[in-house]
Amino acid sequence: MKNFKRVLAMTTAAVMAVTSFAGCSSNSANSGNVGGSTNVAEGEKTIVIGGSGPLTGDAAQYGVGVKNAIQLAVNEVNAAGGVNGNKLKLVFEDDEADSGDKAVNAYNTLKDQGMQIFLGTVTTGSCLAVVDKSKQDNIFQFTPSASAQDVIANDNCFQICFTDPNQGKASADCIADNKVATKIGVIYDSSDAYSSGIYNAFKTEAAAKGLELVSEQSFTKDSKTDFSAQIADCKNKGAELVFLPIYYQPASVIFSQAKAMGYEPTFFGVDGMDGILTLEGFDTSLAEDVMVLTPFSADAQDEQTQSFVAKYTEKYGEVPNQFAADEYDVIYALKAALEAANCTPDMSTEEICDALVSAFQSLTFDGLTGKGMTWNTEGQVSKAPTAYVVKDGQYVEG
Image (cartoon, rainbow, N blue to C red; front, side):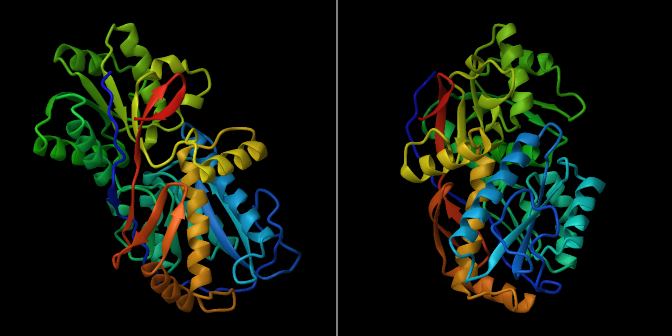
């Protein structure tokens, strides 16, 4: 395992342009699927924020983390006096990380509950299923972690996460610039827009950086339990490093099967890898020396991270993942923009949207997932991820 020491700067797309909402009315504090106390009195005017993500299914760890982080941040904001003296209220629905009817149904349910701002979705597939609907409804959409470039095609949706192309490019740059390996294997999910988007950008940048992709192997959502053929091809073709632009569940299987086959390359993952160290039943020693490019690590020692981790762990009994940190930042970035623009629930939705667009152009935001975050005129965010290595079941900055 070669050492590498570098904090990577990466400009990523997070389009944050908005159109008019469909009615910004006063809302009862106790209606909807709140999911916990929001420090709102009966009948008090609120700004209703809706979110959707997988609370059940294979990706539930992401959705639960996001929902928990929203609730934690909303409670904190409300306890501190709200936004311009008005409280926030959360409604949240399970979309099961579905890219079809379940995602659409979750979105429609949130609208029925009075959603005024949409914080979703958690996964790319679900987001692509509803972005056109949020555009048609003129609902301001802010996703913590749906990272495909197409997510931000409409001017009402923006991201706080890194886009897939930039994750792929930055990963190839990290490997090449730090001379981690020259012969690379890739195993990616061809049925997933997130995975495919990162892979395509990685392949292009790898060629530009002189990295040799000796094996490019794919799987689909229907064939993610046996990776022996993909692993064998990487091994037989001499891949020194295997790039995994995939989520942690299939990655955990790959690690186990690779060890059984006597294959020990360097493995390199991106933000979807976050969660593997807390996966129930997973032997964390299988992830030893795995490299991960991510904007957040719960093991980081800065005061802001440690405060968030302590509060989240105390409330929910588990360590927050990167998806939770992304959503926590979403709430506070939104709060800053709403306050800078002097937004209140009595403003028209069009006024709120115009004000937010202007506010974000001059906003500099320090969050858990990036310091000095800024947005350009196209709504793109600039922030820097960090390269980590798994050591003894923890993320250590590389």
